[in-house]
Image (cartoon, rainbow, N blue to C red; front, side, top):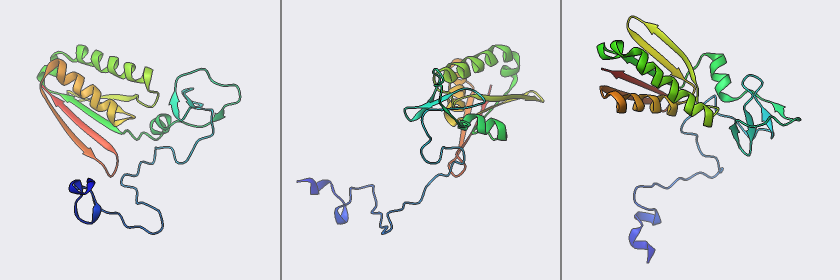
Length: 172
């Protein structure tokens, strides 16, 4: 019946058996900025006023008796430790910098309006290159893909799973 889809020893193909007797599994990615354990609800970030409610950070009315807890985005900003790095460069970029940076800001504002933990941290200029840093790898990817979709050029990704960092480079 179901055995024709199973590999050796009753394990589905593409999967491997995990043998642990203590019930603990080794974490594959360690993110120091991911909330450890369950936060008391409701909680409010004293820096940005995001509210942890129903298991996630969101923008909503701050409850009167909310616990104070710094959100992961504010923690990253305070520590100057971005999760996403987007480098923008090239002659086309320099010629259209203002327009492209307008797109960067719009994408950042759109994401932050829905997801409090996705924010642009900083925009730095040096020798014709612009570096945009973000609190979230998905925001950096979204901005990079939006620029690539609008202007083509070359978009390269480098993801480091051990540190949960994404580096993108767009050149045109």
